[in-house]
Length: 163
Image (cartoon, rainbow, N blue to C red; front, side, top):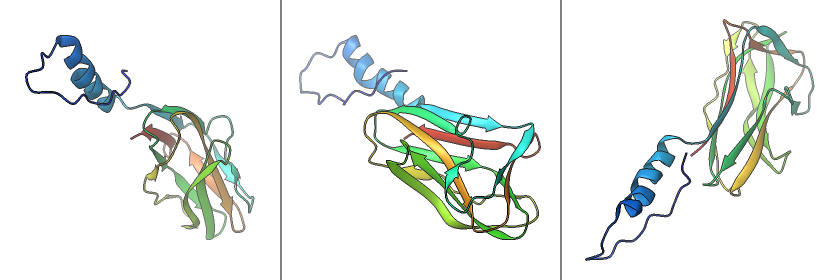
């Protein structure tokens, strides 16, 4: 994938060459259509069990993504099926660069006893420095036990993409 190049300001009468067009048109379009993406898809395993009432990493190995950005912006998504041991309130967030920045979906997601999809829109994070960043999924419960399913029927998908 090509890096983004600030588009040139063209001048009247300027001779445009193939390398110029390749840099400012082809490569920039390629960059826009092949944005950096990192994801973890968890399926076919026992669910993650969360009992802590303070935020902690759900899985510091498999749900910690690394992405190199050039724009300073990222979109973060989570597709998950949640289940409580009782009806409960849970919190889900993403720790960026080991807590240097945090993006929160909610501190009070209502979780039912039946398996239900988490109602989470993508998070847009701006103000990141250009370079490599880590994104770790964290969760907490108000009380009781939260299960984040990751079976073939209810896969867990955590992703981050530069925008």
